[in-house]
Image 1: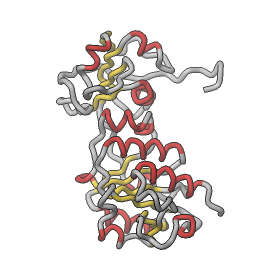
Image 2: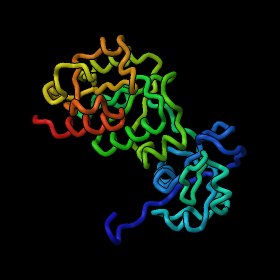
Image 3: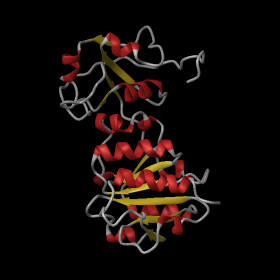
Image 4: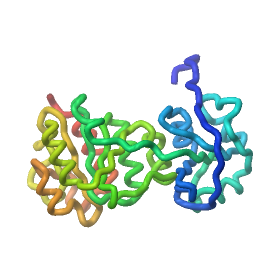
Length: 263
């Protein structure tokens, strides 16, 4: 933010919460977020309904923005906050309880631009999903798409790994991933699945126009049925000395390739 630019106001709605340590999903059905970037982004997101903030005074002072005067803050020390989050989670003096984000549907995010869509097939590690959200935000992806049964829930771990991108990148959850890929094809997307065994490199496979980039879980890769719903399979040209990349690293490299392709 440029010096002198007016700080964006924080937002909030009062409420109560009960529950202890966990991954970031409170027993009341709310989501618990921690860390400065995740909490700050959620406070600035007008689509979020906020319930309560547990914080140290240093944590609140680190925020880029002003909390409303009636925002429900419970002052606490670091040890108290550590009991509200996942073990050893770096809360940075801030723990926020808020409502989950509203559902986003595929038709809401496709067709308006050539921005890529990332489709994740059984990527279940919340750290990886969060890191992919962060790369998606960095390279201007339109959305990520996951199958609801084979993806982590919205949580503090995802939000912390996403470093604020959970609030800005639409996350579409679908029942049937193959059907979603068919809908993307009908909307004009060229579906490219990343597969280490593919003969074609990603650079060679990139067309003009919108792309749906499909990534499978580490180890297993894409399921056969999902690969069959891709228009092309491509690999990243990594060294023979390394078998594969972490799925979040592969997503970042592929998004960079898409962003810098020749039109």
